[in-house]
Image 1 (cartoon, rainbow, N blue to C red):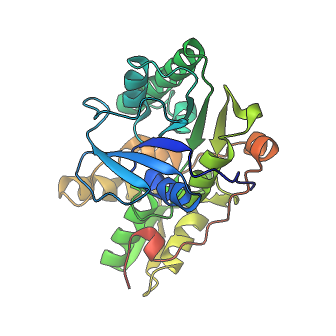
Image 2 (cartoon, rainbow, N blue to C red; image 1 turned 60 degrees about the horizontal axis):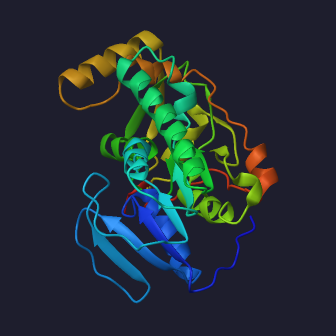
Length: 295
């Protein structure tokens, strides 16, 4: 992937800087010599090139008058509300959304459908306000992020498997997946910065390898020191085990819609990102640290 070299005089505001994507982006910005203003709810220590601003999108701290770029690495709906309240004429905007906007709008789960609606509305609002501000905006839609140990999917699987020594999956969990490394997302955010073809566009950002859900979980377990066993069970038994685990407080946030998607192919076209800004994501081969585990 081509990453432009940047002058130390360029400045960026990063929302969601303490999250998994934001943290990876900060590392790349600082390595490239940027002056960075990062927003965080908690006070943090400044460095020569990094100023931490305490606040959030609903109660933001004072920001630089006119940064070169604003990155949004947190909840897109909150960023869209903030962006619409501020005049940032000509300021480049790069915001992360999610492929959930594409796959959850028909979910049987009302909360998931609501998420898809909010993401779609936020994307529209960002593009509309950017046009009003004579600014260029790009929206990036990652899927199944891994690499920082902060995700709620693959790292959660790793933690449960290490705790139990085994992990259960329904036999139907064969839907295709493309887990994407967080640093590839950070690299993409910098690559689109000076890419004129990316102005006013959204891009699906998936990983460089397509795996079945089963294969993906196998690779998670292979990364763990004691190699937990992967146990296939009939779908009806898996549903019963999930109900039991939820009632006993061992499992949270795992509904029927999540289980149904295990059998669905969730594959996204990354060719536009390859063509426009040289996106070249890695395959899925996690280490314990990338799954949030220590030896």
